[in-house]
Amino acid sequence: MQYTFSDRISSLKPSAIREILKATSQPGVIPFAAGNPSAEAFPVEEVRRISKDIFENDPILALQYGITEGYEPLRKRILGYVKEKHNISRDFDNIIITSGAQQVMDLTSKVFLNEGDTVICETPSFIGSLNCFRSYRAKLCGVPIDSDGMNIEKLEEALKNNKNAKFIYTIPNFQNPSGATMSLEKRKALYALAKQYGALILEDNPYGDLRVAGEDIPNIKSFDEDGIVIYSGSFSKILSPGLRVGYVVAHQDIISKMTVGKQTQDVHTPIFNQLVVDRWMAEYDFEKHIEKIRGIYKAKLDLMCSLVDEELGDFVKYVRPEGGLFVWCELPEEIDMLDFCKRAVEKKVAVVPGTAFTMDENDKTNCFRMNFSTPSDEMIVEGMKRLGEVKRSYKNG
Image 1 (tube, rainbow, N blue to C red):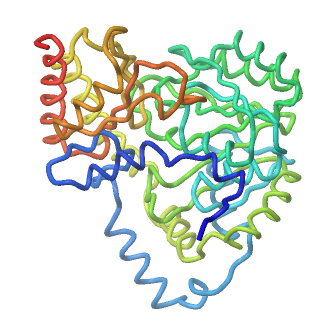
Image 2 (image 1 turned 90 degrees about the vertical axis):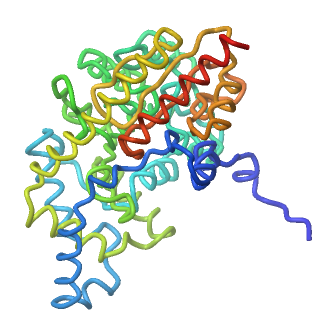
Protein backbone atom coordinates (compact mmCIF):
# COMPACT_ATOMS: atom_id res chain seq x y z
CA MET A 1 0.00 0.00 0.00
CA GLN A 2 0.96 3.65 -0.24
CA TYR A 3 2.00 4.97 3.17
CA THR A 4 1.37 8.56 4.18
CA PHE A 5 3.84 9.54 6.85
CA SER A 6 3.42 12.42 9.27
CA ASP A 7 4.69 15.85 8.29
CA ARG A 8 7.01 15.72 11.30
CA ILE A 9 8.89 12.68 10.01
CA SER A 10 8.52 12.79 6.23
CA SER A 11 10.92 15.71 5.85
CA LEU A 12 13.66 14.08 7.92
CA LYS A 13 16.52 12.27 6.26
CA PRO A 14 18.65 9.47 7.70
CA SER A 15 21.64 10.63 9.70
CA ALA A 16 24.61 10.89 7.35
CA ILE A 17 26.78 9.53 10.14
CA ARG A 18 24.61 6.43 10.59
CA GLU A 19 24.57 5.85 6.84
CA ILE A 20 28.35 6.14 6.64
CA LEU A 21 28.71 3.83 9.65
CA LYS A 22 27.05 1.10 7.60
CA ALA A 23 30.16 1.14 5.41
CA THR A 24 32.38 0.54 8.44
CA SER A 25 30.97 -2.98 8.76
CA GLN A 26 32.72 -3.91 5.55
CA PRO A 27 36.06 -5.71 5.99
CA GLY A 28 39.07 -3.42 6.06
CA VAL A 29 37.25 -0.09 6.51
CA ILE A 30 38.94 2.30 8.95
CA PRO A 31 36.13 3.77 11.13
CA PHE A 32 37.07 7.46 11.42
CA ALA A 33 33.35 8.25 11.03
CA ALA A 34 32.28 6.75 14.34
CA GLY A 35 31.96 8.36 17.76
CA ASN A 36 32.08 5.31 19.98
CA PRO A 37 34.19 5.10 23.14
CA SER A 38 37.39 3.10 22.85
CA ALA A 39 37.08 -0.58 23.68
CA GLU A 40 39.87 0.00 26.21
CA ALA A 41 37.71 2.48 28.13
CA PHE A 42 34.95 0.12 29.26
CA PRO A 43 35.08 -1.08 32.91
CA VAL A 44 33.94 -4.56 31.87
CA GLU A 45 34.98 -6.50 34.97
CA GLU A 46 33.39 -3.99 37.33
CA VAL A 47 30.08 -4.04 35.42
CA ARG A 48 30.16 -7.84 35.28
CA ARG A 49 30.59 -8.09 39.06
CA ILE A 50 27.91 -5.49 39.78
CA SER A 51 25.44 -7.17 37.43
CA LYS A 52 26.02 -10.58 38.97
CA ASP A 53 25.51 -9.22 42.46
CA ILE A 54 22.31 -7.39 41.50
CA PHE A 55 20.68 -10.51 40.08
CA GLU A 56 21.82 -12.65 42.97
CA ASN A 57 20.68 -10.29 45.75
CA ASP A 58 18.09 -7.84 44.38
CA PRO A 59 16.60 -9.24 41.14
CA ILE A 60 13.04 -7.98 41.61
CA LEU A 61 14.15 -4.37 42.04
CA ALA A 62 16.12 -4.67 38.80
CA LEU A 63 13.25 -6.26 36.85
CA GLN A 64 10.29 -4.29 38.23
CA TYR A 65 8.79 -0.97 37.12
CA GLY A 66 10.32 2.18 38.58
CA ILE A 67 9.32 5.82 38.87
CA THR A 68 9.64 8.06 35.83
CA GLU A 69 12.04 10.51 37.49
CA GLY A 70 14.56 7.70 37.98
CA TYR A 71 16.08 5.53 40.69
CA GLU A 72 16.20 7.81 43.72
CA PRO A 73 19.68 6.86 45.04
CA LEU A 74 21.17 7.50 41.58
CA ARG A 75 19.39 10.85 41.28
CA LYS A 76 20.78 11.95 44.65
CA ARG A 77 24.25 10.65 43.81
CA ILE A 78 24.40 12.53 40.51
CA LEU A 79 23.09 15.75 42.04
CA GLY A 80 25.70 15.49 44.77
CA TYR A 81 28.44 14.86 42.22
CA VAL A 82 27.60 17.74 39.86
CA LYS A 83 27.13 20.12 42.79
CA GLU A 84 30.47 19.22 44.36
CA LYS A 85 32.52 19.02 41.16
CA HIS A 86 30.79 21.54 38.88
CA ASN A 87 28.81 23.83 41.24
CA ILE A 88 25.64 22.78 39.42
CA SER A 89 22.20 22.66 41.07
CA ARG A 90 20.39 25.41 42.95
CA ASP A 91 17.51 25.07 45.38
CA PHE A 92 15.05 25.46 42.50
CA ASP A 93 16.66 22.68 40.43
CA ASN A 94 15.70 19.02 40.11
CA ILE A 95 16.87 16.02 38.09
CA ILE A 96 15.39 13.29 35.93
CA ILE A 97 17.23 10.21 34.63
CA THR A 98 16.85 9.81 30.87
CA SER A 99 17.49 7.15 28.27
CA GLY A 100 20.70 8.75 27.10
CA ALA A 101 21.36 12.42 26.45
CA GLN A 102 19.44 12.23 23.17
CA GLN A 103 16.23 11.92 25.17
CA VAL A 104 17.07 15.22 26.88
CA MET A 105 16.98 16.88 23.45
CA ASP A 106 13.60 15.29 22.73
CA LEU A 107 12.06 16.14 26.10
CA THR A 108 13.26 19.74 25.88
CA SER A 109 11.73 20.00 22.42
CA LYS A 110 8.49 18.36 23.53
CA VAL A 111 8.14 20.67 26.52
CA PHE A 112 9.00 23.98 24.82
CA LEU A 113 8.64 23.87 21.03
CA ASN A 114 5.56 24.69 19.02
CA GLU A 115 5.64 24.36 15.26
CA GLY A 116 7.49 27.33 13.76
CA ASP A 117 9.41 28.22 16.92
CA THR A 118 13.12 28.89 16.55
CA VAL A 119 16.05 27.03 18.06
CA ILE A 120 19.35 28.89 17.89
CA CYS A 121 22.18 26.44 17.34
CA GLU A 122 25.90 26.52 16.83
CA THR A 123 26.82 25.82 13.24
CA PRO A 124 28.11 23.23 12.65
CA SER A 125 26.38 21.14 15.33
CA PHE A 126 25.48 17.59 16.32
CA ILE A 127 23.17 16.02 13.72
CA GLY A 128 21.21 13.98 16.29
CA SER A 129 20.10 17.13 18.10
CA LEU A 130 19.41 19.05 14.90
CA ASN A 131 17.17 16.28 13.60
CA CYS A 132 15.36 16.15 16.92
CA PHE A 133 14.55 19.86 16.72
CA ARG A 134 13.52 19.46 13.09
CA SER A 135 11.13 16.66 14.03
CA TYR A 136 9.16 19.20 16.10
CA ARG A 137 8.94 21.45 13.02
CA ALA A 138 11.23 24.04 14.56
CA LYS A 139 13.15 26.60 12.56
CA LEU A 140 16.90 26.29 13.04
CA CYS A 141 19.00 29.44 13.18
CA GLY A 142 22.73 28.80 12.97
CA VAL A 143 25.38 30.90 14.70
CA PRO A 144 28.98 30.40 13.52
CA ILE A 145 31.60 28.94 15.85
CA ASP A 146 34.96 30.62 16.36
CA SER A 147 37.98 28.83 17.80
CA ASP A 148 36.75 29.84 21.28
CA GLY A 149 33.09 28.99 20.78
CA MET A 150 29.91 30.61 19.49
CA ASN A 151 30.28 34.03 17.87
CA ILE A 152 28.59 36.30 20.42
CA GLU A 153 27.89 39.19 18.03
CA LYS A 154 26.12 36.83 15.61
CA LEU A 155 24.26 35.28 18.53
CA GLU A 156 22.83 38.65 19.55
CA GLU A 157 21.80 39.28 15.93
CA ALA A 158 20.00 35.92 15.91
CA LEU A 159 18.17 36.72 19.15
CA LYS A 160 17.13 40.15 17.86
CA ASN A 161 15.86 38.70 14.57
CA ASN A 162 14.05 35.69 16.05
CA LYS A 163 11.57 36.86 18.65
CA ASN A 164 10.18 33.32 18.97
CA ALA A 165 13.54 31.73 19.83
CA LYS A 166 12.74 29.29 22.62
CA PHE A 167 16.24 28.16 23.48
CA ILE A 168 19.91 28.30 22.51
CA TYR A 169 21.51 24.90 21.97
CA THR A 170 25.22 24.69 22.75
CA ILE A 171 27.92 22.06 23.29
CA PRO A 172 30.49 24.25 25.08
CA ASN A 173 33.11 21.58 25.81
CA PHE A 174 34.97 20.06 22.83
CA GLN A 175 32.03 20.74 20.56
CA ASN A 176 30.81 18.06 18.17
CA PRO A 177 31.93 18.27 15.41
CA SER A 178 34.30 21.26 15.60
CA GLY A 179 36.17 20.30 18.78
CA ALA A 180 36.05 23.96 19.90
CA THR A 181 35.79 24.87 23.59
CA MET A 182 33.81 27.95 24.54
CA SER A 183 35.78 30.45 26.62
CA LEU A 184 34.57 31.54 30.05
CA GLU A 185 34.03 35.07 28.73
CA LYS A 186 31.74 33.78 25.99
CA ARG A 187 29.86 31.47 28.37
CA LYS A 188 29.03 34.44 30.58
CA ALA A 189 28.10 36.57 27.57
CA LEU A 190 25.83 33.83 26.22
CA TYR A 191 24.08 33.54 29.57
CA ALA A 192 23.60 37.31 29.79
CA LEU A 193 22.12 37.47 26.28
CA ALA A 194 19.76 34.56 26.94
CA LYS A 195 18.53 36.29 30.09
CA GLN A 196 18.20 39.63 28.29
CA TYR A 197 16.15 38.21 25.40
CA GLY A 198 14.09 35.73 27.40
CA ALA A 199 15.53 32.54 25.89
CA LEU A 200 16.52 29.32 27.64
CA ILE A 201 19.90 27.61 27.21
CA LEU A 202 20.18 23.89 26.50
CA GLU A 203 23.72 23.03 27.61
CA ASP A 204 24.75 19.66 26.20
CA ASN A 205 27.85 18.31 27.95
CA PRO A 206 28.57 14.70 26.93
CA TYR A 207 32.33 15.26 26.59
CA GLY A 208 33.12 17.50 29.58
CA ASP A 209 34.98 14.80 31.53
CA LEU A 210 37.18 13.99 28.54
CA ARG A 211 39.53 16.97 28.85
CA VAL A 212 43.12 16.04 27.98
CA ALA A 213 44.72 19.50 27.80
CA GLY A 214 44.14 22.99 29.16
CA GLU A 215 42.22 24.09 32.23
CA ASP A 216 38.65 23.21 33.20
CA ILE A 217 36.15 25.99 32.48
CA PRO A 218 32.98 26.38 34.58
CA ASN A 219 29.84 25.08 32.91
CA ILE A 220 27.18 27.63 31.99
CA LYS A 221 24.78 25.97 34.43
CA SER A 222 27.20 26.78 37.27
CA PHE A 223 26.24 30.47 37.15
CA ASP A 224 22.54 29.89 36.53
CA GLU A 225 20.78 31.95 39.21
CA ASP A 226 17.64 32.43 37.12
CA GLY A 227 16.60 28.88 36.22
CA ILE A 228 17.19 29.39 32.49
CA VAL A 229 19.79 26.66 31.85
CA ILE A 230 18.82 23.07 31.06
CA TYR A 231 21.91 20.93 31.69
CA SER A 232 22.28 17.61 29.88
CA GLY A 233 24.76 14.99 31.13
CA SER A 234 25.47 11.41 30.12
CA PHE A 235 27.33 8.26 31.11
CA SER A 236 27.70 7.20 27.47
CA LYS A 237 31.25 8.48 27.04
CA ILE A 238 32.60 7.63 30.51
CA LEU A 239 30.91 4.31 31.33
CA SER A 240 28.82 2.77 28.54
CA PRO A 241 26.70 4.11 25.68
CA GLY A 242 24.82 0.81 25.55
CA LEU A 243 23.35 1.31 29.01
CA ARG A 244 21.58 4.46 27.72
CA VAL A 245 21.72 6.38 31.00
CA GLY A 246 21.72 10.16 30.85
CA TYR A 247 20.27 12.91 33.00
CA VAL A 248 19.02 16.46 32.94
CA VAL A 249 19.29 19.07 35.68
CA ALA A 250 16.91 22.01 35.33
CA HIS A 251 14.39 24.12 37.21
CA GLN A 252 11.91 21.89 39.04
CA ASP A 253 9.01 23.25 36.95
CA ILE A 254 10.78 22.13 33.77
CA ILE A 255 11.57 18.71 35.25
CA SER A 256 7.89 18.26 36.20
CA LYS A 257 6.83 18.79 32.58
CA MET A 258 9.63 16.58 31.28
CA THR A 259 8.42 13.83 33.61
CA VAL A 260 4.99 13.93 32.00
CA GLY A 261 6.61 13.93 28.56
CA LYS A 262 8.80 10.94 29.39
CA GLN A 263 5.77 8.98 30.60
CA THR A 264 4.45 9.05 27.03
CA GLN A 265 7.75 7.71 25.65
CA ASP A 266 9.40 4.96 27.69
CA VAL A 267 7.76 5.34 31.15
CA HIS A 268 11.21 5.21 32.77
CA THR A 269 14.83 4.46 31.94
CA PRO A 270 15.55 0.73 32.58
CA ILE A 271 16.00 0.21 36.33
CA PHE A 272 18.71 -2.42 35.95
CA ASN A 273 20.82 0.01 33.93
CA GLN A 274 20.35 2.70 36.58
CA LEU A 275 21.32 0.26 39.32
CA VAL A 276 24.54 -0.58 37.48
CA VAL A 277 25.46 3.09 37.16
CA ASP A 278 24.60 3.84 40.79
CA ARG A 279 26.60 0.90 42.15
CA TRP A 280 29.52 1.69 39.85
CA MET A 281 29.68 5.29 41.09
CA ALA A 282 29.33 4.17 44.72
CA GLU A 283 31.74 1.24 44.80
CA TYR A 284 34.57 2.21 42.45
CA ASP A 285 36.94 5.14 42.16
CA PHE A 286 35.03 7.31 39.68
CA GLU A 287 37.76 9.94 39.37
CA LYS A 288 40.46 7.29 38.85
CA HIS A 289 38.43 5.83 35.98
CA ILE A 290 38.07 9.29 34.42
CA GLU A 291 41.84 9.77 34.62
CA LYS A 292 42.35 6.38 32.96
CA ILE A 293 40.16 7.16 29.96
CA ARG A 294 41.66 10.64 29.68
CA GLY A 295 45.04 8.96 29.32
CA ILE A 296 43.69 6.65 26.62
CA TYR A 297 42.19 9.51 24.63
CA LYS A 298 45.15 11.84 25.04
CA ALA A 299 47.40 9.22 23.48
CA LYS A 300 44.96 8.63 20.62
CA LEU A 301 44.45 12.35 20.00
CA ASP A 302 48.20 13.01 20.02
CA LEU A 303 48.70 10.15 17.56
CA MET A 304 46.01 11.34 15.16
CA CYS A 305 47.11 14.98 15.24
CA SER A 306 50.75 14.08 14.66
CA LEU A 307 49.70 12.02 11.63
CA VAL A 308 47.40 14.76 10.33
CA ASP A 309 50.45 17.03 10.36
CA GLU A 310 52.65 14.36 8.77
CA GLU A 311 50.31 12.97 6.13
CA LEU A 312 48.08 15.97 5.28
CA GLY A 313 50.29 18.89 6.32
CA ASP A 314 49.10 22.22 4.96
CA PHE A 315 46.47 20.44 2.85
CA VAL A 316 44.08 20.88 5.80
CA LYS A 317 43.57 23.40 8.60
CA TYR A 318 42.39 22.35 12.04
CA VAL A 319 42.30 23.54 15.64
CA ARG A 320 43.74 20.95 17.99
CA PRO A 321 40.93 20.08 20.46
CA GLU A 322 41.57 20.04 24.22
CA GLY A 323 39.39 16.96 24.64
CA GLY A 324 36.39 15.14 23.30
CA LEU A 325 36.49 12.56 20.53
CA PHE A 326 36.86 14.42 17.23
CA VAL A 327 39.21 16.32 14.93
CA TRP A 328 37.57 18.78 12.50
CA CYS A 329 39.55 19.45 9.32
CA GLU A 330 39.04 22.14 6.68
CA LEU A 331 40.11 21.44 3.10
CA PRO A 332 41.39 24.03 0.62
CA GLU A 333 38.66 25.95 -1.24
CA GLU A 334 39.55 24.34 -4.56
CA ILE A 335 38.98 20.81 -3.19
CA ASP A 336 35.43 19.47 -3.28
CA MET A 337 34.79 18.12 0.22
CA LEU A 338 32.24 15.49 -0.83
CA ASP A 339 34.61 14.26 -3.51
CA PHE A 340 37.37 13.99 -0.91
CA CYS A 341 35.10 11.94 1.36
CA LYS A 342 34.16 9.71 -1.57
CA ARG A 343 37.81 9.12 -2.43
CA ALA A 344 38.47 8.33 1.24
CA VAL A 345 35.74 5.67 1.22
CA GLU A 346 37.27 4.21 -1.95
CA LYS A 347 40.46 3.86 0.10
CA LYS A 348 38.32 2.22 2.80
CA VAL A 349 38.51 5.12 5.24
CA ALA A 350 35.16 6.44 6.50
CA VAL A 351 35.09 10.13 7.49
CA VAL A 352 31.99 12.29 7.98
CA PRO A 353 31.32 15.11 5.49
CA GLY A 354 30.77 18.47 7.13
CA THR A 355 27.36 18.90 5.50
CA ALA A 356 26.03 16.35 8.00
CA PHE A 357 26.33 19.03 10.70
CA THR A 358 24.93 22.12 8.97
CA MET A 359 21.55 23.78 9.53
CA ASP A 360 20.63 23.22 5.88
CA GLU A 361 21.98 20.71 3.37
CA ASN A 362 22.66 23.61 1.00
CA ASP A 363 24.94 25.36 3.51
CA LYS A 364 28.48 25.39 2.19
CA THR A 365 31.28 23.78 4.17
CA ASN A 366 34.62 22.38 3.15
CA CYS A 367 35.19 20.47 6.38
CA PHE A 368 35.08 16.84 7.44
CA ARG A 369 35.12 15.14 10.84
CA MET A 370 37.39 12.36 12.06
CA ASN A 371 37.03 10.31 15.25
CA PHE A 372 40.08 9.04 17.13
CA SER A 373 38.45 7.11 20.01
CA THR A 374 36.97 4.16 18.09
CA PRO A 375 39.83 2.96 15.86
CA SER A 376 42.83 1.18 17.29
CA ASP A 377 46.22 2.89 17.15
CA GLU A 378 47.15 0.66 14.23
CA MET A 379 43.97 1.72 12.41
CA ILE A 380 44.76 5.39 13.03
CA VAL A 381 48.21 4.98 11.52
CA GLU A 382 46.91 3.07 8.50
CA GLY A 383 43.89 5.33 8.03
CA MET A 384 45.97 8.50 8.02
CA LYS A 385 48.38 6.89 5.57
CA ARG A 386 45.46 6.21 3.23
CA LEU A 387 44.19 9.79 3.59
CA GLY A 388 47.68 10.92 2.66
CA GLU A 389 47.25 8.92 -0.55
CA VAL A 390 43.94 10.68 -1.15
CA LYS A 391 45.70 14.03 -0.75
CA ARG A 392 48.38 13.04 -3.24
CA SER A 393 45.73 11.89 -5.72
CA TYR A 394 44.72 15.53 -6.16
CA LYS A 395 48.24 16.70 -6.79
CA ASN A 396 48.75 13.88 -9.29
CA GLY A 397 45.30 14.27 -10.89
